[in-house]
Picture 1: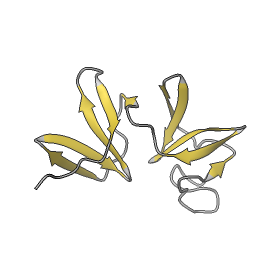
Picture 2: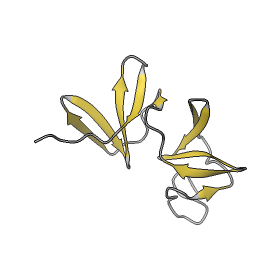
Picture 3: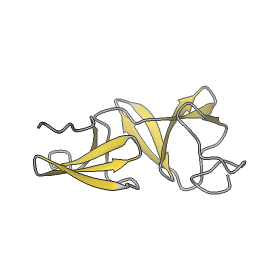
Picture 4: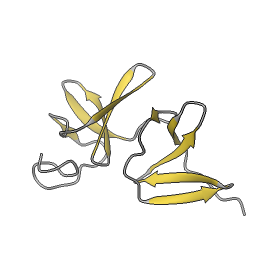
Length: 106
């Protein structure tokens, strides 16, 4: 790995991209007994003996807020957008939960 965001060819991994090794300094989060790994703005899950770039499942809770690009307020509640993934603080589980994309009602 060149860094956490690009593979050894210098490309940003896309959903469905398979890698042999996780990037350094990755974090592991379990959801319904399944491990998901986060590093450098990307999520991975096991794929045979390798790992595949994926979106985290709805409801996954993390104790950290992944690198995000925008804070959007819907109904006065901040939603944090990191690529195609939205997170919202959930005080009942004391973490940031992956949520559906919020929609504006006009």
